[in-house]
Length: 96
Image (cartoon, rainbow, N blue to C red; front, side):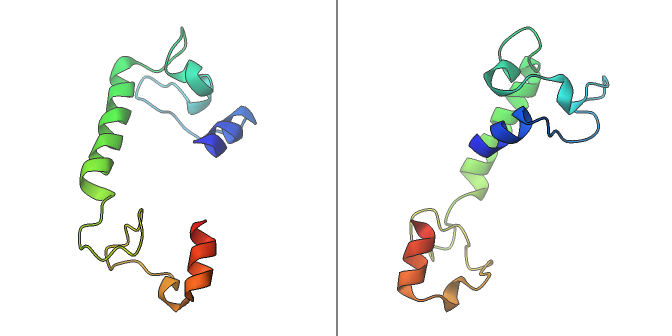
């Protein structure tokens, strides 16, 4: 969230429109002003964001298989990217 805020304040936005009304991503303000204020996204748009994050929290971002090595390990035996080849010290330094 922090880096996303920094990037948008620097003027970098996604191209195209965010809705069918033709509002572009850069037509909305940065930070808290994007959800409260005169130029904020609509309440239904905010509701969609909250519902999507809630869906991810409840159904996707969890340790389904019980194979997690540490808190926040959501690989579920599917993704590795070389993690299992690191020694214990390297794993600890990457999680710190």
